[in-house]
Length: 234
Image (tube, rainbow, N blue to C red):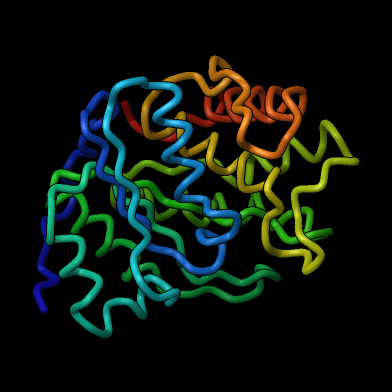
């Protein structure tokens, strides 16, 4: 398997492309509430007329473990993806342990070698673990400091939303996975990170089972978070 990808390449700017060809590597967090479908619907709504294809890679292994066979890299190299979302860097929920970054760094390099925009997906915090979202975001910032990449401020958006409305239900009953509202907020952050369009300018989408007011408040949170914590270096 080829792992000798060039280091330090600029992050390709694919904000205004057509079609969008988006590949997602991740675990159960990317499958909750059809996150890929939400991202596709938001882009199609915000950029009428463009073609959007979002594919979730098979499996749910951590990013370093995906390198144990060639399947994941073959998929990456199988077509001209415009964006690659990368979720699955190992981290400690307690913050007491550290894990290697090499696997995630390789995926970033491999994505840029394909002229795709890599976007890191730092997970949101679990219920009542108030420092986790910030800590996971900082971990991914350390990765981007080594190898340039986009970094979607997912956990920071969740923290902002929950601090503004403590009655908001973003977590499922397991305290980990997202409700539809949580997945919608995550998708909004990716929408703005991918397209560069302000998420707050999107209209309410009728076939998403959230009220117009709730969609609006989540759009505002996503837009404000990405404006404060820019996802990409362009």
